[in-house]
Image (cartoon, rainbow, N blue to C red; front, top):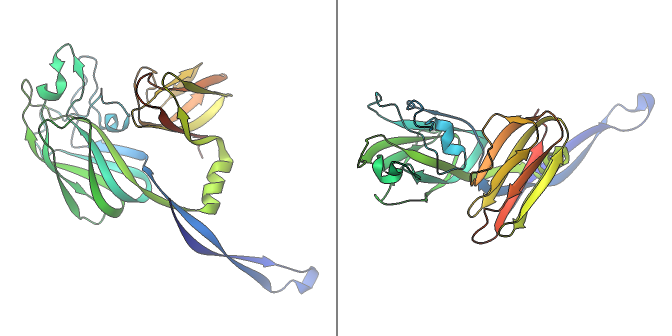
Length: 288
């Protein structure tokens, strides 16, 4: 964590009655807190999307659902260039992009990673028009992280240049994209974020098979949850509807959802049950 400082000036009318003519200025310093983290994506679009089939969807929002068992794929009629555009929730200094290339799941057809096409080379483009080239090894699974040197931007675009052919289909597939960066907030703003939260629990550790749960009354909520290094299962118990699917049977590294709790319900974060302890964070607030 890095800390910067900003000068804050507060003017107030001090005194009584007609004597209170001149404002008194109080000058001080409040720290600006810069935290590197996976940044929330407000909106994702793409050159096109393959129609849903065989129980799968291929929409660009799959790139931020925290699951490697889903993917974005362009339409067969889209001959390129293929691209995806990620709009961050707010302008940030982006330090790295992590991409899970290909369709990283197995099903009745076999290993979808090799059956479908995947990126060989591409470019990352930012608000100022500058680009960073990226290259993938043909067999690179999981996330591949590309440092980008600190780019001040609101939008990240991935422009696909070349691909590795699939052994069965030539449908380009990408499973997940994570944008890491720094959003600078004043200590006052950080304190306000915590103050308005219904739940604000950063960096708690859950061991293998363990879980944490919180009960929420009826209302509208915005939930942001993360889990590292492997992921968590996130589930609601009760009458709840969300703008993104939360099924409880997926291992997610991050999720942001707007949910309506119709009757008192429980939100549960659970360790996947294997491997090392998970470091989780949960922030729940009423949306503006």
